[in-house]
Image 1: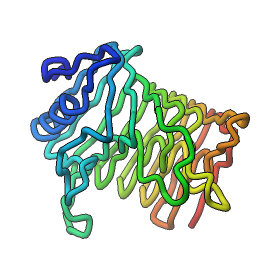
Image 2: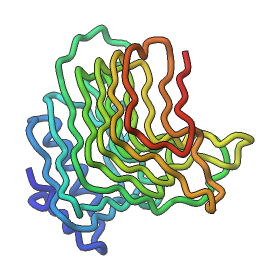
Image 3: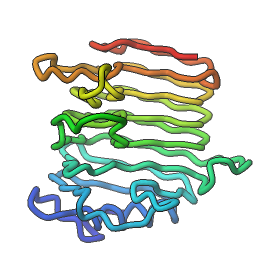
Image 4: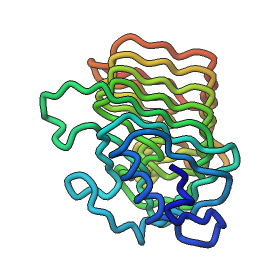
Amino acid sequence: MNVKDQGAKGDGVTDDTRAFDRSVEMVCERGGVLFVPNGNYRLNGLTRRRSGVNGNGYIFLMLNSLEWRMEKDAILLFENNFQGFRFRSLTDPNAKTITKLSLIINGGKVLGRDIKSKGKGNPEKWAFVGEYLKSMSVQNLEIENLFASAGVASYHNDFVSVINCKLKNVTGNSGDLMDNHGDGIYIGWTSKYLIKGNSVLNDVTTRRLGRIGICIEYEKSKNGTVEKTLSAGMIGVYT
């Protein structure tokens, strides 16, 4: 499925929020590939109208495995507190369900336009999140100037890989005594992980450092590898 077939323009002027949400909903239901050709796609938190999972407009329920594939010069412009795309296989996180679904995010760039401080607390924003999946793969993705909880996040997955990605200035809330979130890569409750060939950097001249470069958290995050990854922040493991 091509997002332009659902009305996205990618001209840097048109609000493409509804076209993207409609495309994502369809590919979550049917499976397959969501294709984003080169262009500048404005995604606006003020005009997002979907109810989402449990009233959360940014959460999408996957019924089938899917790949989100972007061309190299496909740029997603996050504006006005746009909360990104969070994929899960369960409506109820407490459900005792075995899933075999997989999510692939491949290529393109996310450029945030809300880099300024928002006060205090968790931003509750991400570029891409996968949860309750058999596997999640993120590769060849660039994220820059994103005010967020994390750029890429994995929750409750069997396996996640983040490979050859560039993340710059993913920042949290500097209004707190310690920067609140702003992880480049976040992994929680994930059984196995591979973090390889990435760059996670922040420009200190902005005075907005992220909480941590790469965060691997909680005792259910088990064996994994971090290699050939440059991080200006910390690589933190919490158990």
